[in-house]
Amino acid sequence: MESAFSGKFDSNGKMLAGTTETVFCAERRWIDGPGSLFTRMFGCMVSELAINAEAGGIVTADFTVLGQGTEAVTDAQNVELPSARAILEGAEYTPAATNTKFAGPDVKNITVQGLGTVDYSTFNFTLTQDRAAQTMLGSAYARGVGTAGKSSEIVATFYRADLAPEKLIKNGIENPAVDISWEYNFGGNGYRFSAKAQPSFPEDSEDGANQMVSITFVPIGHTVDGKETDLIVQKLIPTP
Image (tube, rainbow, N blue to C red; front, top):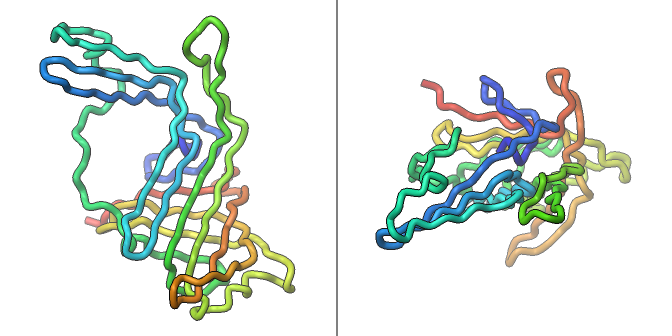
């Protein structure tokens, strides 16, 4: 999350997207009889994050990762290989959680300034970092990962009968930025996202017997707590 947003969570679980870059290492292990294969990917950074939610479905989060290189080693004779078996500093070797997954009912408290109360069918968020590997002659690995900029968008689809979404358009031609926020919240656990974003003109569509409308919101920079940011992420913790 910190790599995707170029930010850091503070002690209160709040992160402002900015220019603080996070580099991490990922490890995979395959067990094949007495031997194992380890692959470590170094210098990793997230280049895209896509969180998609639809009514009646599971919320999915897809991370696209760009790295500087990999290291693969085997222990086919069950020989201890320190480079493969050594625990990486700062690595977490905890088994994957089996907690309940976020689903459509867990996408809550969607608020769009000036839009009013509507029932949403889909709510998708995409963040893209303009990153590229810095390759060089004489090495199989990149010297680093360059970053040129960051962009994001929120696409919301809801029922046309609920409301005239054109009320977000001023004077028939202007679409000023509005405050928008939403949560992925299960039992008090999850995340709250918020931004000041500029809406697109509404686009009508049909989904079977339903008349739908979708609006794309593009977050813009604004000042929060004395810092410039375009997105705010807050960890949600259940109240004791």
